[in-house]
Picture 1 (spheres, rainbow, N blue to C red):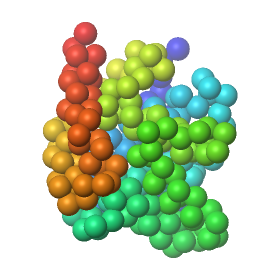
Picture 2 (cartoon, rainbow, N blue to C red):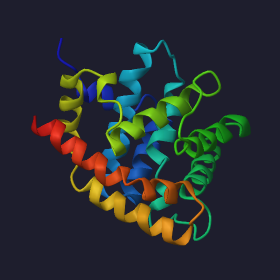
Picture 3 (spheres, rainbow, N blue to C red):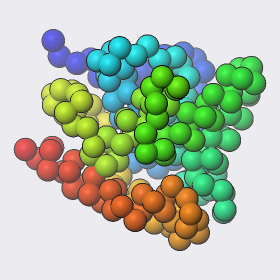
Picture 4 (cartoon, rainbow, N blue to C red):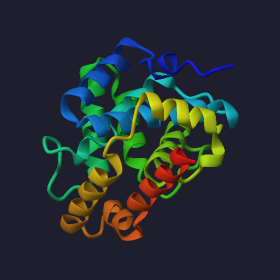
Length: 203
């Protein structure tokens, strides 16, 4: 059965649709596509490892997780995932969520930059961490069918994501040398991930 990419990418609720509106308004096309692909990877992965995430929460966090690297929301000294988490929590409060649920958005966003998130502690955080690692660093191609990876990437192309995000991470690292962005910058995984994706899509 072929993958219905349009259905896969559709926001699961009206609040989720507003989160998509936010990322469309404040992020570059390449960053928007990264968020949408990350949602697709997380959604496709969840049933294969017997996880049942809060889809609305996961979608909102996935759409907003990189706002901290955008010019309008970049905090000069705060790690970008913490800045993005704050934006996510503020968005959720404005959407009418209670304080506990709104804070969950912040937690999921903050944890996506951890080296690993325990699925038993945070289902949505685990899925976002794994999904963004796949999309940024090309780690985990074996987690999903190759035809699904190709179908989603054809619908939501990578554009200049790897080069642009590598530059953003490097700039963050220069200002925040003890941050997770600096760790990622030192690893070289953004550029390496772009090369892995290029090779995969060309094969």
